[in-house]
Image (cartoon, rainbow, N blue to C red; front, top):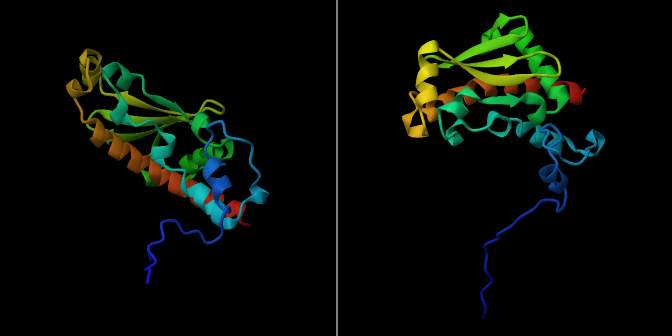
Length: 184
């Protein structure tokens, strides 16, 4: 008598339903094929919005090799996010940025401290929205001198963790608002 193997290696409720969502993230701008919101189910839309996280939008700080790369770190948000999400992000900063640790320091600039002497800034100039890092003057010289990541005066993992936490707070509000206007 032969025994059947009871282990199922792949299980799908409805085959083929989620492939287009995996292939094409409509909220992350990475040169994907055009997408149609009408063709997405609510589950696919929720999954796609759930992919809008700091780790999918921002370059990892732990991959930086030296102090110069740290000084030059910036992310053009329109290169990573759909333009409608960038507009919603700016709206979140304007309306509730300070309660999410992002304080307005200029007409189009919000700042969040992520470590001793290191702050993340979001420039909200229309069409040029970007996130970049700023440093205390004492750190700039040390970063210029750091030839390898091990020589950096601050832990990249610590800075990245705090940056991702603070940016994810913003993105959570952006996802919530986007879900609201998409499901009206």
